[in-house]
Picture 1 (cartoon, rainbow, N blue to C red):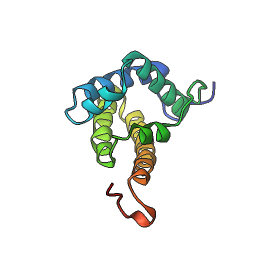
Picture 2: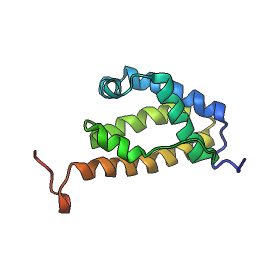
Picture 3: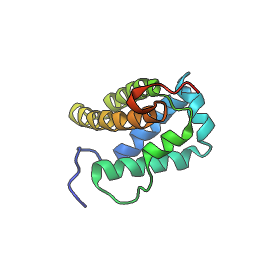
Length: 133
């Protein structure tokens, strides 16, 4: 197994993901959006655990394109990423040692910027002009 990029285990990742999605489901803005798209929470969480295991631990197993998934959802808006990241950061701080939480947060924020840009592209015309229809 390759050296982890962040000092966490698969068990840590699973715990963080489970706690985070508990919070997402309860969030007044994010919960309804996720509820429209996720009918199999254990399956969704397993897919996200595989994503983070790939990104952090270098493990194989995740297949997918997060940008495509979020773009195709059609109701994910750029302003949703700030509360998403705030909940994720809170979960990381509560579940992990400080250094691991900080490193994972930095990675999550980089990924969040990529996702936000992918969603924003869908909502703008060339030159950044907003699509009105």
